Length: 159
Image (tube, rainbow, N blue to C red):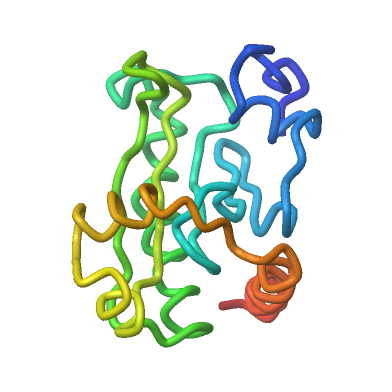
């Protein structure tokens, strides 16, 4: 991680998580030269990961060549990691980049979705995510730590 990018925007929660000034349950799962993978701090369930550039970037169009080159393979790797480790029904990958209707530090949400989620919220796709946000149920910190340990072990094993 390049030191000049740590906490690039002090008002940015994503930068604060990278810099370690914001609490991050489960810690970092994976780090590349350009990207960080960590557990989502929102109500999208245990195992939902965030893939975000180390650098404070507001628009996909502003990604550097290096960031762009790493992105596709990294999203595939993270999706495969969740699939092999958690056996979800599906893995959603989507971009979130608005905070209070203002462009924010881009981050791709990589969410394992289970049949129980679909039944519990009687929804799928964006409607499922909206329902989960509306319910506001944050995952248990111990469960997040446990799944993050499993994911890091899978990464270390070459997954």
